[in-house]
Image (cartoon, rainbow, N blue to C red; front, top):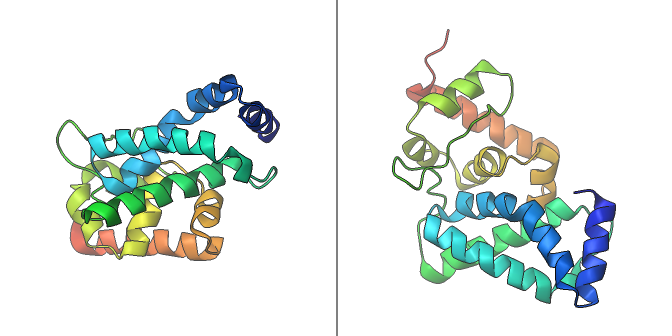
Length: 184
């Protein structure tokens, strides 16, 4: 969805026209779910928080500033709601992947880099992710699960893009050091 289309939807929402919310919901349901799941790590919680997200979005649509990057705005809101949920229920942070029916499969490598593709496709990622710092976990989850760009992650976390890319590359290096990459 383009910025102009998103702004048109916001205008509809502000006029109490639910079709604006429906268009945003249809376009971004999966995106929001993946962000939330990346933080909470449980399917049921992610579904609940995603539903709550769209209710809150409807109620707070007037807070959105046009031209501020709607995907980053929504990602930040979803991430904050997920973190609030974790804090409220004191759940373990960032249990991103598991080997049961709650598994989210990465269907495309993050980049053409063979190291990254190998890491993402061949490891027991839940255990590997837990070896990373909290900041590295957040960046890897947003990059892999939410399929966000480094620029979107930077905006969402309110840190410089160089810091985001550094955290991501350091995470990949750490995974490789722990033996999760067997390439030449």
